[in-house]
Length: 634
Image (tube, helix red, strand yellow):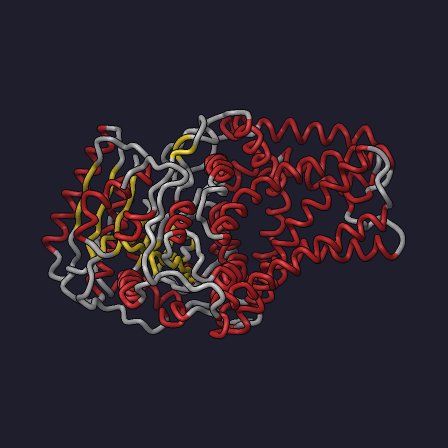
């Protein structure tokens, strides 16, 4: 699978794979998409109209710029809000809004059929070898527990490590796990390891080389990251679904972050579990077979991927040209271009990942992701891509482009408010007079609040979902505290992303090093050094507020200034694992991975701690103990 392909490379069409134009499926998809697009556009137009009516035509460039920026950021927020409304409605419709594949995923056997072979590949680059092979051991045990002779799925480590010492440790751990497998009975999968000599193309090149060298041995490939974990049952269900769905080239699962104890990680794990389900339900409902690939915890049809997902080398120099960094979404778009369905399973279960454990590492990842998404400006026009695939790419771009728009709006809005003595659009119409200003304030606050309120209401409406978060009291306290943290974190994240967009366009190339995945406490010196820009921005904002001497303006912008000025403190304090564990002991920021912990997560914790992992008994015992200790639902 070559890594160099022109933009107008030939598309390998698969006969019978396309959905005919004008079919009921196409009309249904169009209707579903219009149900998201039209309310979004209507809401954006309403906000723009009310803003103009409330404050009149702009007088001067400053007022005009504030109005335009306000309308742009609110159009984006309208899109975000309507995704949650859409997701809630789709969730309420149940099976009527689900794909046949998702409905089948609930009943498909987790047993090997004998009709296919699958490689579960873990792509690594200078990772913690002990942790990687510990997870591999857990997945091997999980496959063994599901029965069979283990011949249907091989576990494969694909190393891109260049450091000799780290590579030696990988080889040592592979020798250990091989010896372990020989001593632990029949039914374990085959364990394989290979290290590339030339790591061209990074992870995409690593997977491509695997397809060229070993692809003929396998029908399907489950792609995992170094921090991924998937149960044996989930792997075998995915393989069975692919066997039964010859039009499907890729099935993407939703993997939730878990397994880390810093306060920052626990808050983020809680927030994603609480707020992601409705937006993901929306995504699956409108995209249908025009899905996207997220790069890991997904199963791919090897032949389809090898023949159609070749990445182009973008014209021009890095950062916007050269090798594609965020390759997964592009690979999914190329698969779809060739006629293969790309599907999403929002509630598959049995699949997890980890996340950066502190703000500093998260911001570093965001800078890399920002540059990768900005490259997609040159991918969107590629010939033959489906409109939905172009939209997936565009959403990634817009999610980062919204950040400099927000920064510009807040900065110019503050200057305008200081000059006029009125908050104006900066205050969303709350300080305005007249029906238009009042309506504007109501609509804007509703748009901003809907995602979190609908998500919280969705959980509160179900006793089972409430129990997964530790009960009503625990959920409400955690949600309130998470909102306080988010108010302080949002200015930091937004300013950083805006800076990442700006530096990408002026030519700064970021390094794509291995991620730091361990619970680590950020030192004060590191936090202050890496977040000096937020301190400067916070000081400038505080100076403007002091100069304006407007108490209402100062009160309104105080959370932004405080968030920027406290950025290093946020990084240091929330990176503490003892605070995260203390919060857990007090019933805060709990998720289903705390209240109903899966045996595989227990086994992984034991394995990393050096304890021998036995099938069934220790994991099930701890799970039962956790269930017994749960407080009743309020």
